[in-house]
Length: 114
Length: 114
Image 1 (cartoon, rainbow over the protein chains, first blue to last red):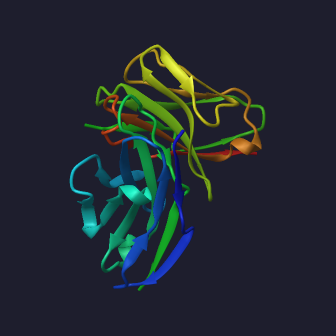
Image 2 (cartoon, each protein chain N blue to C red):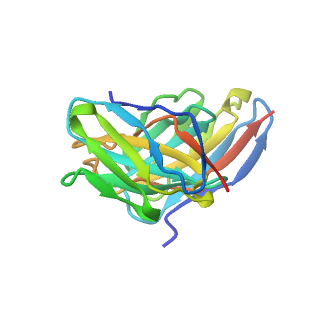
């Protein structure tokens, strides 16, 4: 079974700082990778996804993530965070074929200080 | 297009009571699932269904039942509520098997068992 590890439990940044949230997964086959965001009191929304092709994917609100197959990683980045990015971020993995299963990491809470 | 609709949004139960959390989707998605979200634990899969009449257990199924009589609806039943089931519950749906589709989430149900 696949698993997902998110390195940081809570990250605190000042506005305009750069962000990188780590995500590693364990699964031997082809994977589909996702980052979801949960704003306070809300449900999960998709930030970006990687299925195939260019390993650098761009999502909404200026976020991007890079898939590095050799490192089993899918780190999330943003060059300059805003107060409105305060949220919890979840990395998730789904096997490439034949499965619906979506496995989530434990999440990283991001607090952006104005 | 309403997406995934969960009811109720909030619920307080006494230990031993039973209740049903409702989930409905209008996207004709085959796959539906229930997660619980607890602080520091991420999202953990309770039960899932790959189509009408087919359900299976996830990571934390004990104390919960599900059924899938129609494509649209996937209710989650708590048989005899316990304080350990205090959590936020999310229903999600996905379009098709294969892994390369995103999951859509409902707004969540915040359940407190006293």
